[in-house]
Length: 342
Ligand code: CP3
Image 1 (cartoon, rainbow, N blue to C red):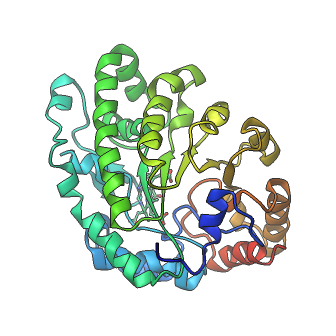
Image 2: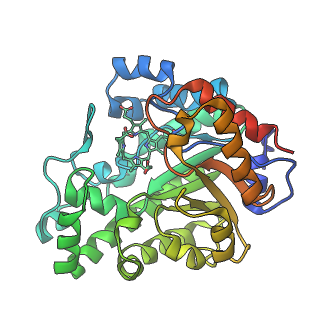
Image 3: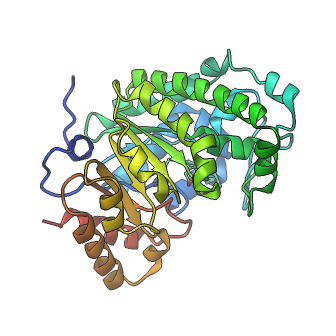
């Protein structure tokens, strides 16, 4: 095993003692960085994902400019449905858009899961290139969407306010929904295994839309598939589960052998520690909008977050992705407050 020079993040994942908590930021390579905007104006979104040189360059930006303790490979959760044969576009000022969402059984049968891994080859190349460029300075995180969150996009065709289409589909045709969830799970497991083989040091599963389900439906449509992925990977890589809005499942997730759980800002550190039996590393949970506050307030709120979670078994992060137009200096204040914490 090659030693990574800054191994704070990996130590925190193992629950080992650290002098200060590590920090990284969900969506850290993004629209608040001027250099990212320059590339964004030159290449469309999926070109940036599919060109290993560009993905590598973008991944390194926040490491060089903000000085975070872990890098996350630049990509998107929607490369998985894309590799299964669904046409996904990224529309400016709108977000993901699928012109022909999944509507019925034959749409699910027509998905190509055999060639998905091969179609994702550009991600593995980007990981290999980025690992080399990082020169073992900091670890590299890989990620995927949870099967439920990916199914939401495949059926809604975009983000949604009330998720009526996807709920309608799943509650009317549960067998079809489970068939689709199984297919996504299968592709996601082989995708993440190959990503780990390509050099990833830890994986994060984004269940960004888990919180739209009731706690009982969450047990039916999301939790079992995340558990299946975690079970398949946790002996070969640390797994971080980020179940946004799902405090009801924190206790269950703390017992399945994952390395850490991502907490959003709706749950207090105290409650999250209580629900997880103080038994697992937690990650989070600064409200991304709070980065628009004055520097004095950012410092104050960051310190209280650090005090509440405690220094050990903790990874400082936001509670969800960083927002566009966040002032870079404010991000630096957030990071510096964490790095100075003793
Ligand atoms: O964290 C990182 O820096 C790595 C890059 C990353 C992106 N997407 C790049 C991106 C990661 C980890 C993601 C994950 C992702 N993508 C999630 C889960 C995390 C979350 O925020 O809940 C989701 C739901 C998506 C789907 C997605 N991709 C949406 C909803 C959008 C549009 C909204 C937005 O934030 O812009 C995207 C586009 C996207 N993915 C951008 C970036 C930097 C911005 C668009 C662009 O650069 O052209």
